[in-house]
Length: 89
Image (cartoon, rainbow, N blue to C red; front, side, top):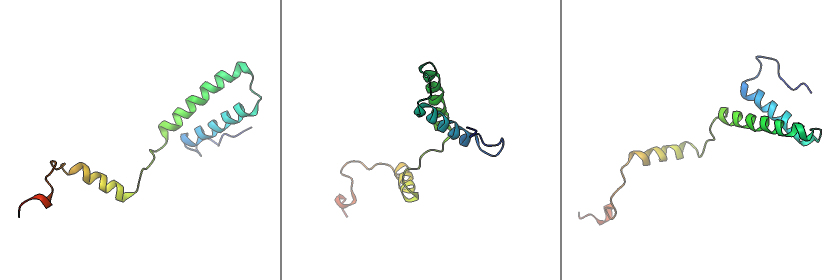
């Protein structure tokens, strides 16, 4: 069960993902004793947190959505009833 990549060939995130898979295999394989289950589960949760902290944030939307969001932040909010159609000309 040598799933560790050679040193220097994988990023920390990739090595953590391998470790996550090994923990999942151990927990799902049925070979873990009750005594070891708690410690493997703790390590598994720690690995999941490390992966989450190192993973890039999930992108929501595309470039057009990002531009629209930036514009909405820059533009002041108009007062209620101050639309152009209601202004005298």
